[in-house]
Image 1: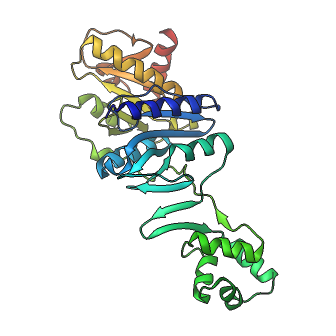
Image 2: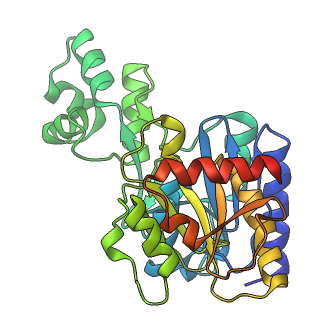
Image 3: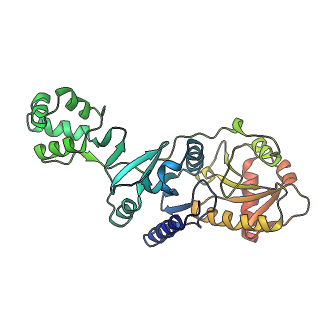
Length: 322
């Protein structure tokens, strides 16, 4: 996966975002997402692929679940589909995640020029602003059939455009814009948050005693794979907006000190960019109260707590003291 061309693209993206007001994370090795970037309320989880067809459904689901928990937007930046280079200002899609080329990303970040064309089965399509289309048609005193005849499409097609039932071919949309002297195409929303709810019941409880403690305390816990952390925990009943951010959690798992310290670097980095609290939950009796700036909480301490807020308070106290 660590193709030199891919690493170069990642570094180029990191520089691009950093130079245009984004706070960027490290580049994570062997993770379902490569980096995280934030600008104000926009949080991006980025994956870079040389061939966009190399991602499978399981990998895509992992990125979407993590993105949803962080209230972030997953985005794949790719170079090719099979042997063909991705076209500029065109949005592709793989397993429900939008995919764009590097030049398209540059246009978006530098010029705020967002793509309108979607590559899908059968060709290229654009979304029409049906309300604007109907308003200007009626303003010009044109019937559905009048406009359909001018655009060389059926009356039913114009009706479907106006009611958002179908997308249009770019050529048809351009013809309508020329006829009506009005822009009717809509930019594609690349920054949607996936609609994926965390379900605590899906937790694999084998050898996850620390996670079970969080569930008992009132957290929903989503275990993760191929991420810089072990699980994300969200309060089931957040009382303030600040507690809606997930708790980034690494578990004991009998790791050695060197591994834990390496993980702490990534946790600290992610915590800063996402605005979330991070914690190590240790089962061992002898451990520090923090590890390279990341608070450490013992399992027995959680066992004595009654509410999730007690844990959040302890984490923040130890963070301040670290």
